[in-house]
Length: 525
Picture (cartoon, helix red, strand yellow):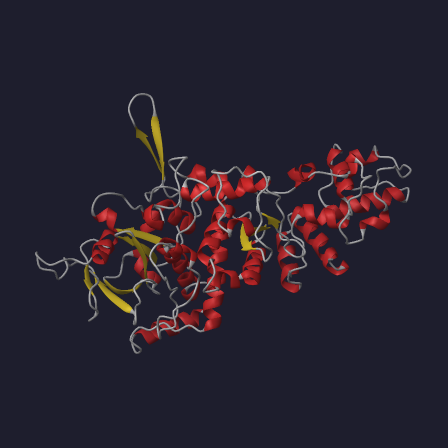
């Protein structure tokens, strides 16, 4: 049960938000931070306050009031025989009247307990979610999510059990059917940091398969470790200073890594939700559920998906709180952290939206042998499951009157992408990925995803003729940092018959005619 103080603060926040008083709301959140009892969803707040009927009647007025405080104030003013002045012309037409059978008693409005259902409850008292749906911004949530029992980040972040339709759609988007499940490599993958000196920033991949997801998350972790507002400018300067004297090391403690991981996950989920909402899927502690009405042969139990509880948040702060409260489910070395995070990403984007993002509506996010498709990687790093890596969209003439729309990247991304396939002419990586906002790139080479990065943002303007990049492969069991020195204006040091490392070929798709010095590290062939 929410305290009266927290309910009051939630009502004030709802008022400030609906009135567009963003600066005042920001000050309130700073002076009185939200917590697990704060209610950020209007449906839940109306239900907790027992004013669903008042909200419905207000919605039916020709000039409805915008906020719950105004609705309740108007109610009490009417009960006192006065006429509200906030509704202008429309309010003049409203007359005080005796309490009707279906009105809400004043004593019920301020009681913060959920209504109890009884056998004699009348239809007009049992209001539906749709009754006030248009008063809350829930875009761009698809119908499948809207119909799955949306609950915002309420007093205790209460979630809803996943239903059969959502579970089937979720698995079908990943595998193409609802009877396949993740292989053992995925099932054993969680988010664990490396414990080797100077590589503490790296997430460890145990087996082949989920490298696309892990490298994508790794890129965002590095973004928060090196560049975000949590790092004072002096700290970054100190890192750069140590480059020259400490063999280019990166040292981060447990607190910094945990914070970067949480911020990275929140970034990705919030971006997938279009900056409007996000979903967190967690495994319920209850026994495995059985879906009533499931059709044999169409859905196969996997002992994980059926146990999911879905929790939704409509502010990024609430997303961060949800992740912090449930981070152990993603970090547990014997858990399914990678699978859960993929579920969160898909549900945050929306099941229908993911399908519409892809060139082929029957496409899927999982490739052969448990490898991540380009659609999965793009979904994580850009928020959209587009099938291509060029800028914008291309209408492909397939002959006759029909054209196929090929969907690429719509804007400059926080982290970038380089591909060996571009070297071989199989794809074109656009500038939105080649020149990201931060000097961090996923590298796709021979069906494996790794990460290149630098702490020097100046390399993005292509003005530097010599600079360092660091390379990290979570699967390679690195025992020391790999530093590559890039020099512009050369053709490399390789003889004609030498085998050129694929990583160098990927780098040269971004920095043409550069040479790569591995600095006494054995080149990766």
